[in-house]
View (cartoon, rainbow, N blue to C red):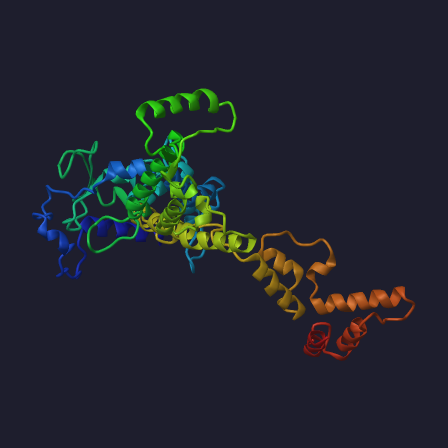
Amino acid sequence: MAGAIKRAWEKAKKIGRRRGEPERETTLYPRLMNVGGFTTRERPLIKPTAMNLRRFSRTPYARRAINTIKEPIASLCEGEKWEIAPKAGVTLSREIERQIEIVTQCFRKPNNDDSFRTLNEQVIEDILTGGAGAIEQQVGSDPVRPLWMWPVDGLSIQIYAGWSGGAKEARYLQTLGYGNIGGVQGVPLRNDELIYIRKDPTTENPFGFGPLEIAFATINRQLSGAEYAGNVAGNAQPENIIIFPGATAQQIQTLRAWWKNEIEGQGTTPIVGFQDMKGFKLHKGTDAALYLGYQAFLIREIATPFGISPQNMGLEADVNRNTAEVAEDRDWNTAIIPMAQLLRSHYNRECIEARLGFSQIQFKWIGLERDDETETARRYSIYYKSNGVTPNEHRGTIGMPPMESPIGDMTWAETQVLIGKRKSRDGGGNAEDDDGAEEEEDQGMKSGKGKNGKNGEAKSAGS
């Protein structure tokens, strides 16, 4: 079955346009039609400011924001917290197992230089910096190791926006250097040869928009403010200016020499005889002069397009334990999970399905969805006291091994009956405890339809 699907897919790719497929009537990227006919095959579009984006990605706060998203996903790759598994509703067979093994080996070692972690690190870096990551993929003749993948500089990729969808027609062009503006020199790549992963795609142009690109102006202002503050703090400018009305130039020069010789470094109190001396402040001489508050505002603004909280940028003045935990969960849900799912969708659609022709298996992350531990424990407590789950069933859902004690396979009502019997035996027939709960449970279970009967459950829940 899988082989027939693969052959049908390969045949469809060779045909180009499928039979009965309708033609599009609307214009692709109509706003760009004013720029001198971009649809010609000789004029690919290039994304500007590539060099500045690379430089800005190496500044402290931009690097912190990028690593906040990149490192958790890289850790998932390093620990192999991912798998190739059958899709929902697909029964595991020997052919499916063979496909899973092939794709797993291809992903573990995408090429001779990179691991799956380093491949994803480079791609995520480009997505966050320039709004697009690129992976070249080629299929070799080895049936055990068919797919090869290499990371490509996403900012070096130009796009033929007028691509018609032909299987043999180049859709992308990798150019060399930063000066080949709209040129034709480079490496043409078909759609099936390059995986182009866009961040925040729009219908305006074929490129995506990365968080660093959105924060471009803010980072520029933050660097300017930090440079000014460094100059003020490093140059040690005098804070005051002193005016002696009526003093001659010779008197001022004499006072200056006396100040340097007798006051600076001596620690003595200066006493002068000039009358009507006045002083004026040159600058505030405090942290306000360094515009630290404005710089903190800019740092918060940089964090916003990345979808992370200011505490991850080093602003922890207004953070306590409760807000820190909430912010950490929010960062995981709004920044890390969307990036991981973006990679997952492209791997499934363009690597596994389109390039290899395996339509019944998929790439999945393991442990990406994190549960609220406090809420999970609260739900378990409710289910357990309602006799809906045993400890071992709960432990299995959170990845813990079963308990060795028999209590692990008992409901809450059963454990209460067991406790009551033990107290009765140890106390010489007296089954009473502080609240008499065990005696009520024992009577309720005896009057019910068995130890798991409905009446017994009702009485245990009521107690």
